[in-house]
Length: 127
Image (cartoon, rainbow, N blue to C red):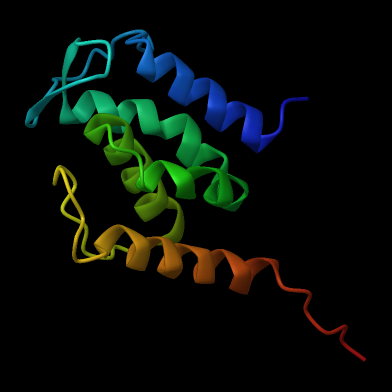
């Protein structure tokens, strides 16, 4: 059985190559952005690509965090969107900024890391 680490890595490898899941029948909407392969997609497509990551739940969080720092905005957006959906935490991050001098990405990673830690810490046994 694949681990969350393997699942996350596989999804981002596929996206990096421009390979998308079968198209949805629902209307595609939102801004457009190019994948690293050069293929242009719309926001709703990237959100659909994040669904398997979201389905992994909290187990995906540590594997998604490095992607928040990725220089490729489409891949970074998928990770951020999945993290927002999994955690319910929506820290301010300019999704498509080329640079991050203000440190918004690192601050967001700290918020999501804290969320994950709070759910994985050993809870004292009830007596």
